[in-house]
View 1: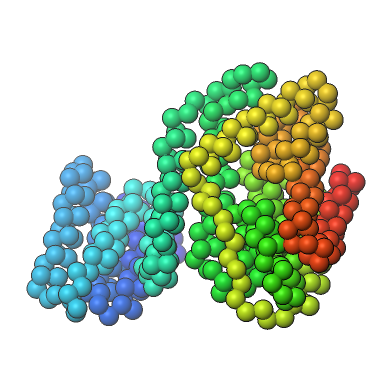
View 2: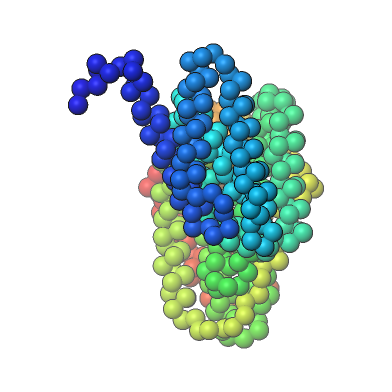
Length: 420
């Protein structure tokens, strides 16, 4: 149908109104399912259309105050409806009220030319409304300790980070306060995600999830705990071996995620190396998993809050020291000096040298191959440290159960390095 002759009659605004109608119907569809809501499918669709209509009139007549008047009109009608007919169980209906005001505002956004943003916000709003039971369950399972962790991470990210100068200082220009703290925020954020998930899920999903989340928070702490529990019985020995192997492989995934965030260009070389280690390790882990029997309740990894200020400061200082040492030794001894730092620092902390190598790669002081080798050597050194710790605490029996898996992971990483 040719609508060119209808231009100027308002037909050209039809797409905006259709978008607004779809937004209202989407949100209203969810509210229609809620028996306590006093507004449903038609009300939300009309409110969204009303927002677009008021925005059109305000735009064409040059009276922007009409947008506020329209919002107040919607709010007034909502208040009147709830006063005249209170909801069951004295429910104030604030969620539905807020959703109606959002629908009006999204209708206005559509006319202002932000249709894509309005649709995205409508989907987000509907999702929040629909998953009310799940969201309430999450908040109820969070303890005071968990909330403190989230607040501390907010301080690290939104209070400390913005005030730090984004400028290079010191020898080799290796110290950038903003970049250094950004690394702290990144590592703390990943650890916090695993920490909260670990406390919320607990033991309900068995060894695989405990190993995964424990490795996401701290593979060293997870190895230490399960090495202690491996002496309880034969079943616990096998289970501890599986959890330790899974936690160690999560480090490979963690390194790829961090590298992809900081320096995506290096993933082309890093992913095959880490991927082969993960593939070989999974094969060994599955072999141990098949020999497992039901062992009852599993112990929870005892991990500290990764967002505590002293822990964040400690990691920040370690990162700066490792970065400086890596830059200095690379300058005076070439790649050999860097690899020595990687092995030594990787014994206890892979993240610091991995982030330092990525930082030097971004500063063009390392090639991609050197950075990948440095990260891989740090990982292998950390594996050696954890194996020694597991063997000394868990004994020869545990060492025998994890040896094949650790060797498989190391062989996969080594093969990946040979293929670089």
